[in-house]
Image (spheres, rainbow, N blue to C red):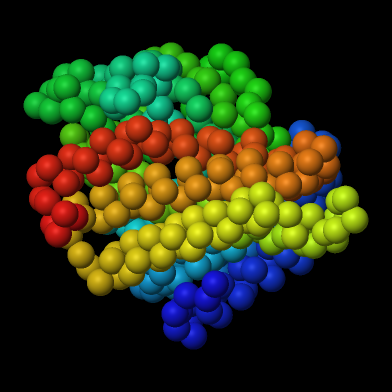
Amino acid sequence: MKLNLDQTSREWQGKARRFAEEELIPCELEAEMNEGRLPAEVARQHKQMAVKLGFSSMDVPKEYGGLQLRTIDQVAVWEQLGRVTNALCWCFSEPHEWMFEACNEEQLQRYVLPLMTGNRKECYAITEAESGSDVVVNTVAELTDEGYRVNGEKWFVTSANLADYFFLQAKLVNGPHAGSDAMFFLDKDTPGIEEIRVPLFSHTFDHHHPELRFNNVLIPEANRIGAEGDGMTFSHSWFRRERLMIAARDCGAAARLIEEATAWAKEREVDGGKLIDKQMVQAMLADSVTELWAARLITFEAAEAHDRGEDVKSLHARCSIAKLYASEAAYRIADRAVQIFGGRGYMRENCAERFSREIRVDRIWEGASEIQRLIIARALAKRGLQGM
């Protein structure tokens, strides 16, 4: 199933595949059996290798020392990293293009560029308890003579245990932009940040998703990102990119699942023959291959649309289509793989079992599948099929 990628994309694809296969996948079982954690030295080596390979500078402009790769090159990388379970591919931080459009020079030097070198780690405090099909921001920011006073709660703050600062979104309660959203840099050691609890989730990751309360937290006015009222614009840019990269990772996961299930079926003896020769197993594998091929075509075409500079509203719809299809397909493929492995597929040492838990959330976060369907349908209603 080879796509017509040029040499540059193939080279990045190969780098990521080797890193995944040689460095990360061999550590999966150790992570699974140790609450997602690897020895500190191993985790540090993974981060250093990822930075050296250039994964942390893919979306950084060249004038800031980055590689400024095309979107299709980045999708090729994340597809291969998606072959890895236990979030071991999250071993590096990655500044995104929107940050260089939104942040001033001091903010770039202090918060953004250190992500590229591995010297800082970020997390996103955006989602709230009431968030669901609509975006809800009840966390408030009041501008005072000292700066912004922030109060509220955030849920599912992924990687907060490993980060040293937040991208925090809050609703302004005073001033000319009262009622609109703003985004801030917030250092994790700022007084008033309270960890309410750390829920346990289905996956076994070292990246936790705590619930946090912000009690009269003071954020300097210089830490506001962009202008007052721009917060949601930045969130939409982040969501669009992350939806596309989720689709890419799901393609990688689905490919590994098909490969592992096929290899097992070819060697498994059942009723005097090979499992691969049973027609119902063949049907499951055939459906999985067809869905993966469709998901890859959708995802890589969405990446090429970014590189062609197509209308941003069209790109939003394309990323929603990619995430919807790839995440739903990958979950079905994981379920089939577990079934093909039988009892062995229900063992945590089997990647099919781990993927069946880990991929499930891809149909929820960064906009659930139902939200993606709404986005797609609204785009159709506004711009028609060709306009999408």
